[in-house]
Length: 172
Image (cartoon, rainbow, N blue to C red; front, top):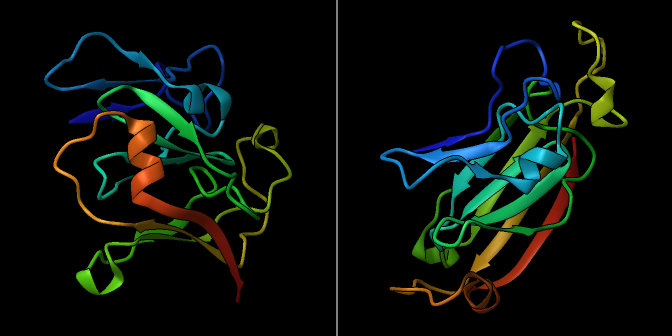
């Protein structure tokens, strides 16, 4: 099990006085591990959107940022920022990973619909959300070239097994 991020005292959005930008494993693999994406997306880093990919890596989206996390090496590889809207709490969007099948060559496609049209994460300073929701759906496709029984290094694995990683946008 993986516990990702959080805060010490609760509240509507996170702040620097209570931020816990780390992740931990249970059963433990040692102490908390600092997460650059969670450190850089304050105050909208409380409930990062996370998916397990066919590679065994995690895709994490928080604030405007997106990374791949290699759980074996604790290495985050930055991807392009999400377009058009913040999608994480409290600007929550509907998200889903589409089915991974042999017919689509196990291509991980994650769909994000909604969120909030905020100019930056710093906009979340009040206890009320008065911004309109976003009417745009974006999706991230990661073309997977096949399964591999072991990986010698995360960077080699990413280069070899993901032929593309592209954000695409559809307006409703």
